[in-house]
Length: 156
Image 1 (cartoon, rainbow, N blue to C red):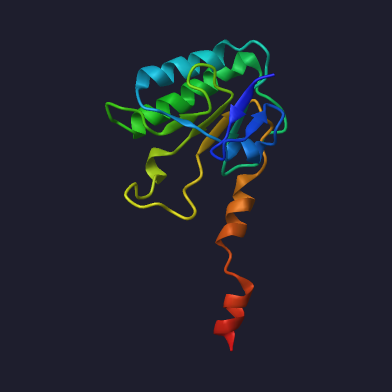
Image 2: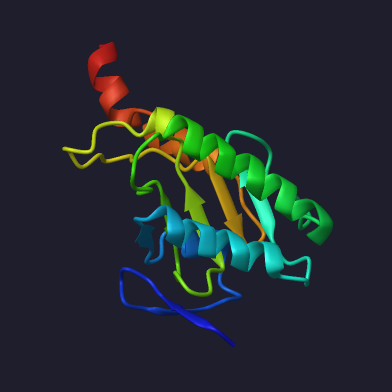
């Protein structure tokens, strides 16, 4: 059983929940060559074990078929290289750069400010993982709601 270290330095088994894995420790994919390697790992997996979750849509209930994964990865890769026309990648993060099981892909058009730390950082555009996705847009909506006591304070 593979384990993953989170930012809190806890050991999480691969069976841990999607949201636990989402909040775990990730490494930035800085070079396009590194991204090519990650895509090769995902495409070469013959076990039909990957979910591709476009975060603004309903999470998939089943994994993507191995014969379709290369096409989907190629679409994502094409979009990234077209919209992030830089010598470096820097918009993809993986739990493991050699054998990833959870990959966050951010939209180059929606990165926000890199010079300040956001309380609610932008969500990735895609999550490619071996863990069944949970809806992240609901969690973000709840985070952005004003506190009830604060609303009551200003409504008087």
